[in-house]
Image 1 (cartoon, rainbow, N blue to C red):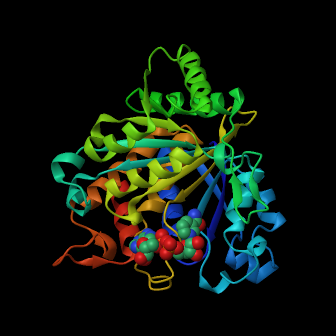
Image 2: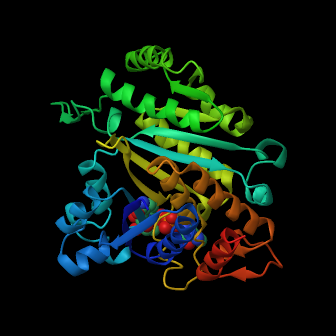
Length: 365
Ligand code: NAD
């Protein structure tokens, strides 16, 4: 029986409550799919600072490097907010992304039919939305050199950031775009600002060239301003979107509101393919540690559970098992099961564990 090693990093706050539900779901589908998972927990973020003084202890990094995939919760909270920048809980996640060279961030935005009315957009606009935003995560404006501020003698200042991309950086994230599109509806929108930025012109050229290797994927180029409009005007026109770091940061948040609640949004961050051809990947809900509800057992575990589905699809190539989790979540929602964040007046409100129970039960059907 194939055995996969999963590093489990619950982190802080509700990360510690929702991650165990995702683990239970993986255990359940693993049994059915004939694979075994070895789960090993490690500390990260504030809980790691409390125990070891560091947000990313070396043992945690070693465990992650040796794992087939990483299941992550969330890090941070008021307790650690006043520490110096380098020792903040959030540094644990940033350092892990950097160490593992996680360069492609995948954020699906799906509007579940039963939650259409939780979206701030009209039903007629949002119904049927099922898209994936892939954001380049390690280059571009956020990391480019030169950067900094300089003062002028007249008291004025100048500040500089630089948007830089190499052919290799564009190609590797675009390849993820094509591969992901292949596992979806085979349509890829590459988003840039090539009417103004030379970096975007290079981006467009490289993506077009790579597209020749993927004749089965329909590629279109979209300007970022048009994309921002289309996402709230006609979100159903998109399948897979790939774009650079800054554009992706903004567009993925815009796409997130289509789904209705933070508690429903999974994500994946992929690194380079390893010798066995699989991508090292970190899978986490988009939400944070939710200090306002932490410890109360009321957090929605569905984003964490849907992140486990992404782990199966993108790190272990187990698309069928991933689809079974997504279908189980869909059925649980169709049955009217709701945690507080997605409940409406009159709904019975479930806790984290109870919601996990329902998904596990649906997987047994
Ligand atoms: P948050 O996502 O933690 O919470 C925002 C709001 O959404 C809160 O009202 C919260 O109760 C609600 N919410 C979030 N997830 C939910 C869930 N699963 N079920 C029900 N309700 C949910 O964002 P924030 O309040 O801006 O940040 C809180 C802390 O989390 C901060 O320390 C921040 O730095 C950290 N954070 C960490 C990550 C990460 O680890 N990737 C991401 C974002 C924020």
